[in-house]
Length: 92
Image 1: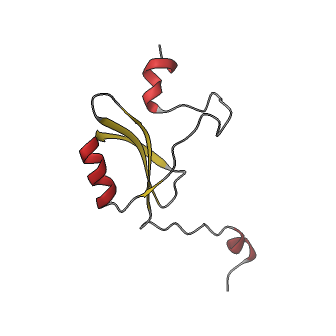
Image 2: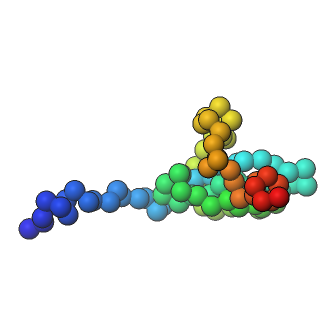
């Protein structure tokens, strides 16, 4: 028999078969910066690949392509930055 406290602390199910990609930008040298997530699009890693490899990566992972982020999506804050921004703006 489960106790009342254990039923209140149920963790949500995460579907690890779902893959998500959000393209951030494409550099002039052909590299694509993007976010990749498994199960939950809000928990991601930042990756960079040549364009051709990026396309193959999306196909091989059967990734759902998410819309790009707009500056209007969220108000700017001290927490609103990416690792790629660190060297240019955060740690001069």
